[in-house]
Length: 121
Image 1 (tube, one colour):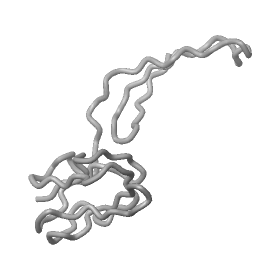
Image 2 (cartoon, helix red, strand yellow; image 1 turned 45 degrees about the horizontal axis):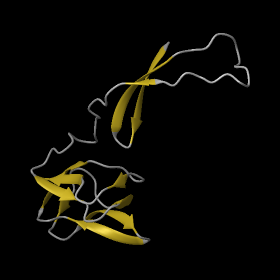
Image 3 (cartoon, rainbow, N blue to C red; image 1 turned 90 degrees about the horizontal axis):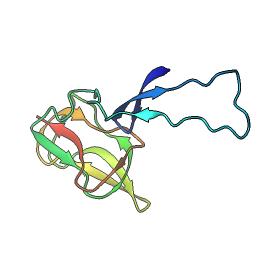
Image 4 (tube, rainbow, N blue to C red; image 1 turned 180 degrees about the vertical axis):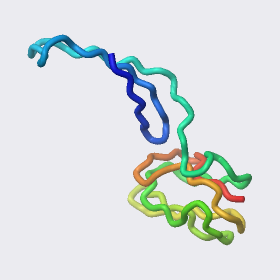
């Protein structure tokens, strides 16, 4: 058996995969499904939710661009990141002046309305 740690959309999974005997599987043979444990805490670019001011998605969509990085100063209304929803790009704006404390998503991640995407101090 081999143990792997796999990260999917920011969630970390510890997976154990059992190796089959021999070099190749017969065409009718099916590989065993990997055992999946409960997600562990995923390391983020800064501590997830590190800041006190939450920046959340206004609509469900997909993250298409990070307009800031951890440590950047932003003013109220500045785009922190951009999501795509219904073929429209929607900037997710800073609710107040501050400094980006964490970015809790990556380009390509799916997000739900109200999901925490970043935090500010």
